[in-house]
Length: 206
Ligand SMILES: Cc1cc2nc3c(=O)[nH]c(=O)nc-3n(C[C@H](O)[C@H](O)[C@H](O)COP(=O)(O)O)c2cc1C
Image 1 (tube, rainbow, N blue to C red):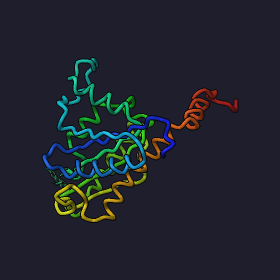
Image 2: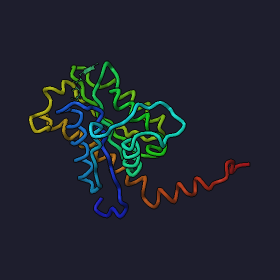
Image 3: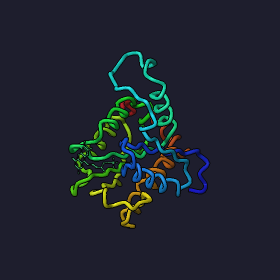
Image 4: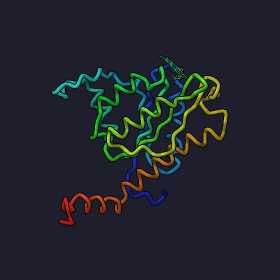
């Protein structure tokens, strides 16, 4: 993707606030994969944002500044890595809330890559499945590749790398594919197609 003339940005949202979070490590590995493809990357560590609970209020301007900062950062990206810990067979509350604070404007038509970690041996399968459904609801394209890192407490070394090189490659591949599809989706040809599609009559056969 060296010929990338479009300014593609991939952000990675970490859905765990825990100090030393393995989810954060996984998101950082996926972002490293995206970076290999020549895109700009940014880790969005929800720990650094003072968000409010989403309450569905009419006047969205009254949300704290960090909500608007988060929205702007995600809106400015063409690809998004979403990382979650498995919490009681679902995604973390902090991540769900962050997603609820956003919507089509931030996610619509964007590429999403999913990574999950779990303490148990069964992996983050439930949270990844839920995130796939949520992505559909946000009108985002969840790429087929996803990674679940089970027994995360023994999967990472002290530097936050995965001990299993093959697994590390799989996580990087999620980032690479998000970057790749974000690029393809943003290419001039894709944009021309979308323009023609949007300009087409509703029922050309009539
Ligand atoms: C509230 C809570 C619920 C959890 N539920 C599960 C679970 O259902 N299955 C599982 O395998 N691990 C579960 N865990 C363990 C976490 O998935 C594990 O500690 C993971 O590493 C947390 O992610 P982090 O390292 O990014 O903070 C739970 C942990 C917490 C704090």
